[in-house]
Length: 91
Image (cartoon, rainbow, N blue to C red; front, side, top):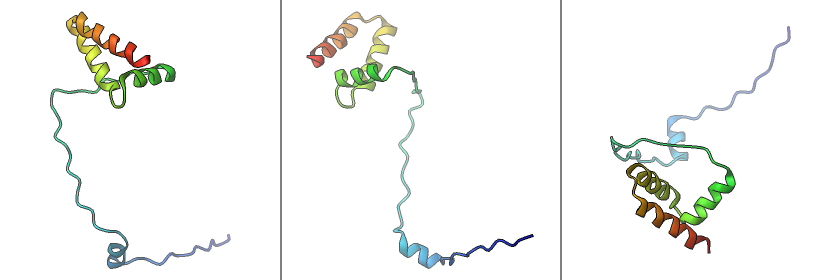
C-alpha cells in the first residue's frame, strides 16, 4: 500500500475570514401574493425572439398575461388590440 501525501491548506481564523469579506445585510424577500402561480410552456427560439421583439423590452410576460386573460374572458377587443400592437412593433 502506498500512502498518498496531502497538502494541508492553512486554516483561516474567523477574524481573517471577516476581514476578507464585507458583511452583507440579509436580503429581504418580497411578500408573495397568495393568489398567483407560475405558468410555463416551451416554444421555439425563433418564436420566443419574435415575441420579445413585438412585446418590447420586458413586455413578453405582460403580453402573455393579457392574452391569457382575454382568452379566458372572451374579450375579443383586448386580443385584437394586442395583435395590433404586435403588428405595429414589427414594422
